[in-house]
Image (tube, rainbow, N blue to C red; front, side, top):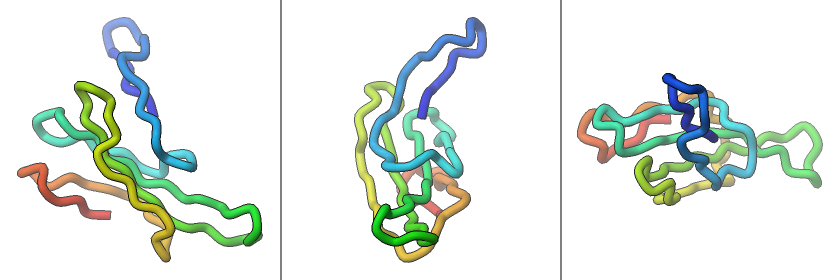
Length: 88
């Protein structure tokens, strides 16, 4: 996942932590948190997708929390206005 500056199109920060490509992204209202969902395809289980999500601190790029092996694929994510809850 990358944060791109609109004025110059350059990468401001990269966010590492998902095992897969992101299926959705959400930026908190205050711009301090970035959340992403993804779908992992285990090599030993053809046709199976396992959901994952992650949250980063935008300023530092630090991964704050990551959960994988969720029993369903998550295709959307939202951060509550108070920044304390995540809807997937």
